[in-house]
Image 1 (cartoon, rainbow, N blue to C red):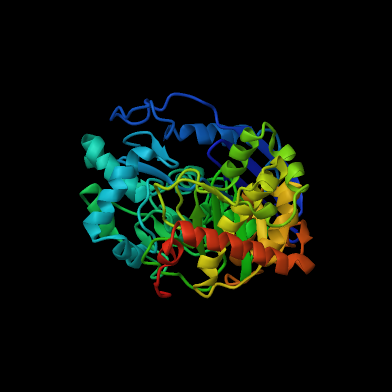
Image 2 (image 1 turned 60 degrees about the horizontal axis):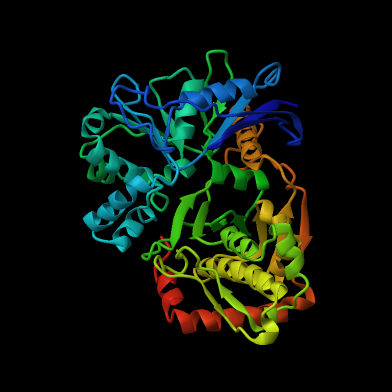
Length: 498
């Protein structure tokens, strides 16, 4: 038996799990929030600290140290690192940050993203190049913003990292060799999941000059050893680590229910989508994670709950008093525009109002049906490109709502799995550490991860309600097509696998 640790540095906190290498059993856990503090002291360029997207990464190290206090890591032989995606750490020739880290969906970079799309010749050109179209979240757009807004700092940049890369580098004592993994690299906007290679020309397009990029190592490779001899695995991004921790594979899709929604599935190859509806990520095992995003998920529920003066639990209870089809009410939940289909400036639509349908329970159910039908649209984008979907994992607090569990299987047309709450990104990082440790010792194949048991879950089948659910879905599609004719088909694209 060996002992490994997985740490997940999210946007708000650090979580650590210590696990048995053979069984995946969690032996110990640690947690600490990221300390709040000014970011302007990082680097000498004087980057603005006014934005919440400017972060001093030293806070991540302080949080890590607090989470690992005491004897949490006693006996640990290897550590895997998962960290928030959508970050950019720009370093000078001395390894010093030229400004605070840029993280998250930084809307300051929206115009930079649009400019990059035009500079390369459109959305299809970007999709073909790297499997995604620039958005304000991606490092490539943040680079263009940096070059435009802080040119002095931009000229000093010689190296680029993502949050997980930087943390691994710090744990290893800041060696000359700097590494990343394919999952993290695939979120930058300048690495192609289809070809498995960097696109330094796109970095130059964004920043104005060439830089050094980390070495992309394999899923079971070690990034190195700490001065104390502790193995540090390749690490990966938070989404990829969570998928690995859940144990999803071919035929599985994962729906994350936040204010917005994301749908991804495990696939055997990268997908090139000229419309940009699909973002082609790589996973933490050598496979691929095509992702489709929606802008409206739980925010549609919250808006309806506020209208009805209830909380989400109350909205769920109301919805279950109605019947499938919500007495003819159909809600298109495009409350803040939409990404799937691509309707950035549209608004939501409520149709089917009759005297008998104007009751709180019918509006409540229409909100749940509308949200889930919107996510089913995203699933259909993946299915339309040959991605197998036999079961759907639902993540997020909203997955615990009884109305979601009752309605989702029939509308999504698949078995629905709701995993028990756990630190899945940290578990995925620990599983990767066990893999790298086993591969280094010759006890595991570098092509086969450790067979840890699947996440404990509740399973919900479509059952006899499948036909009724699909009729509700068709009613939703009819309203969507009447209101926005052709928008969904245009958003699905006609790309090819690459």
